[in-house]
Image 1 (cartoon, rainbow, N blue to C red):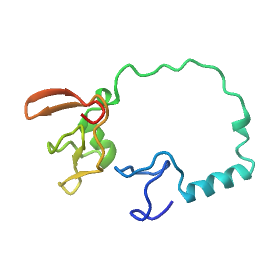
Image 2: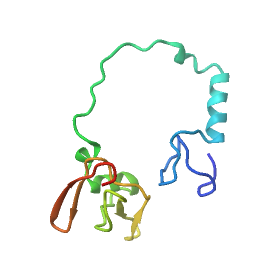
Image 3: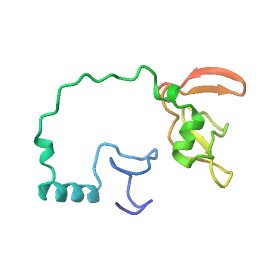
Length: 127
């Protein structure tokens, strides 16, 4: 939906940036969902779900997926973290064109942060 760069990314955006609004739908998504529900294909939403206990992860996402893996998720299997800037504020990754790029988002909570070989701790709320 939409033209990349012409509308602030919304809830269902394929890519997120620092300007993504995760609390609103784009006009295209609203139209699609309305059409889907009006067609009668949304009746499964009337079914009451089974009661199940949800087991929450015990580790933060950055502990499960280090900065290199987070880069691979965003830029492909050959990507890895660029040691540039503060990873907890903005994750920089090596792209296919061998350049450091960013989506202007921090590394995931729990990602190891370090300066050179000095370990500083883990990312928490952008710090």
